[in-house]
Length: 553
Image (cartoon, rainbow, N blue to C red):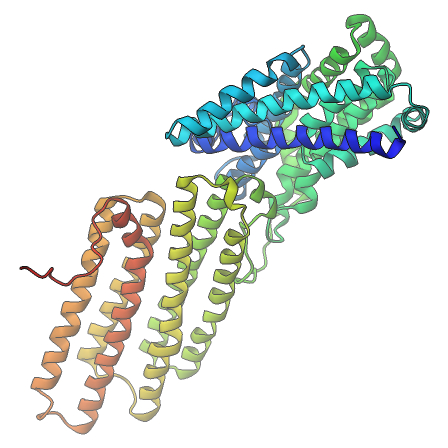
């Protein structure tokens, strides 16, 4: 075999290992994602619970990156203190070592059995959770198969001069090993897969123990680089505290281990003669040591990170997404949560726009009305960003519940943006035109109009709450508001036509404007109700396709 074919075989086995890890992560995520997120969120009350929650969740998901994304989502809101968030990351780093430890034993023989069981569960059972667990078991079997292939490849090619020359060149300088492994882990997005690959190299003597340990240090460093490079959405420095803090713990720990690599290597070889198991043990001891050193120092360390990354104090562009973290796309449940929080920002912006419209109409200030109308632009751009973010998710990684939630988020954000369009392009221009021609709206109509707009603002707040809670009782209350708005418009229309002959010209024009504004408020209210109440009622089977009475024979 030629050297290029050797590299192709290695690349194929590594790709199979990565894909197996991906299947395990997505399978567990689909089956238990909401529960894991709830457990993690509940454990963030103190650092001790947070540490063990991070360890357990990572051991199940086989990805410290996924755990970090969920934790960053909690920390970005400011609802969670930085200290327990950092403790989660220390636990997550230890959690990855448990996965490697489990796979360091001779488990390759289990591969066919696991794939068989996983396929049966995936194909024969209609339960969504069982199918997801089957997917995870298939992925685990593929990982075991990939490990066996890696060992066989290294056995066949361990005496190949070109491969020996390549591995020998990178094994002489520990710093080069660290950089190489860090780059490979950053590209693969999986420290577990890279450490398992290093174990296969060490098992066949392709790299000496000290070089293998240096490669492990690089894999640990590379796993913390991605969240920092890709970074949270937005430019608030405070959002970078957690990923930078996790990276710095790896850098400090790796630098210390690299400085004492040779004595540590002699101890590890004496402690565990088996080279592959020695790599797994070194990986675990390194992360345990980093956790033991930094855990008591988390409070001052968090203080230092807050000082180094203060929150922004200037007003941010409202059209710029804050929560749409590109890295979160690796875990759909986190990405959907981020998009939902961004959609709530749309409702907040519309709320501000509505309050500004009330103030401008009360003052009769046409210039202020023009300023309020311009606020619709950021809402449209933010809605476009949410839509692009959600449509960019891999549909194959989304479960049935994930697809439903994605549809709900798109519906909510689209309806809120349309409501803002009606306010900016219909209601406010009509009011501004009337103010220019006639002046202020007469007092009785003005009070009724502002009362309706205040009621609309209350419905918008209810819709935002319903969007997060999906409470059917609240959906019923919000839906009833459509009837209220329809009845108010109907009564106002009847009153207008009944008294039209007795009105002066200016009174008739004011009354006609009032009706026009009520129609626009009714249209906005319908969009708000449809944004949150209809998806809930549709899910419970309480939404009729039409209000028409069915024909009877």
